[in-house]
Image (tube, rainbow, N blue to C red; front, side):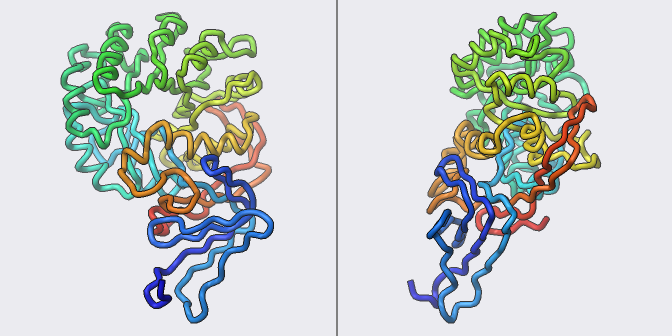
Length: 393
C-alpha cells in the first residue's frame, strides 16, 4: 500500500501480552490499523515495526509494566440506561473500566425489550447483549420479577427472542426467594427450560437456597451449556461443604454445566472461592453483577477488581484472563452475535481491535462481600480501545 494512503496505526508496547485464544503470552507489541489488529509481536526476536520514513501519524504507546489483554467480557452485569431497578450506565461504569462487551442479566423481558434495545443497546458504545428475563417485566420494579406467575410467559419470551435474536444470548432464570416470592421455583425453571429449548439458547441460572429445593435436584434439570451464576456465594447456598466442592456440582460440570462468579452485592466469599479453587474447581467465567448498589464504592467495583480477588483466592493469572476474555466470548458466540469480519475476543491478525491495558498495584487489601480480607495485587484499567478507538478514561 502506498504510504500516502496507509491508515494511521496505533503501536502498543506492553510488558505482558496475553491471549488464551491465540496462545500469546509474553512481552511484545500489538499494531492496530483501523478497527482491526494488523499484527502481534511477542518474545525474543520480535520487535515492533517502526513508522515508515516520512510517516509521522503512527501513535506509539509504551506500557512496560502493563498487561495487554483482549477487551474484557462481563458475562453477568446490569447495563441499563433506563427502566431497570439495578441498571447502571454501561459506558460510564463498564467501558471505562476495561469492559468492551457485557451481557445483562435479565434487566429486560418481553414487555420492555423494545425499549431496552432502543435506549441501552443502540445508545451504548460498549457492546451490550441480553440474557432476556423469563419474566415479561424484567427487573423494572422493586418486587420480585416472578412474584406474579403469569409474568413468566413462555410464548411472549420466545416471541421477543425471535424479534431481537441478534441481541439475545441467553434466558435469565433466577429462582431465588427474592425473585420468586411465593411462586414455586420449580415451575419457574420448568418454564425457563421450555423457553430455552424453543429458542436454542442457554439458561443463565440463579440458584434457590437448598432448604427450599435441594441443589442436586436443581442442577440435574440443567442442560449442557447452561450457566450457573453466583457460584462462590456463601449463603444461603454454597457449592462447598467441609472445604470440598459438592459432588453434585462436580457432576454438573462433567455434564457440561458452566459456572460463573457473579460477584454482586452478596455473592462472593473468599472462603468458598479459596476452597473451590484448591479443590480444582475454578470458575468458567468471571463477572461482576455490577449494579446500582456498587456506585460510589471504593475501590470501584469493576471486572479488574473481581479478577484481582480471584487471583488472591489462588486462581492463576492465565486462567483469570481467559475467564474474563476468550471464554465468555466463546460462550456468548460473539463473532456470530456481532457479525464481524474477523475474530472476537482474540489478539491475532484480523481480530477486532478491542483491547485493555491493566496496571498492577501490589500490596493491596481485597475484601469479599462479608468483609473478609486477603492480601493481593489490584489490577486497574490504564487504557481501553474499542474497534481501534481509544476510550476516554
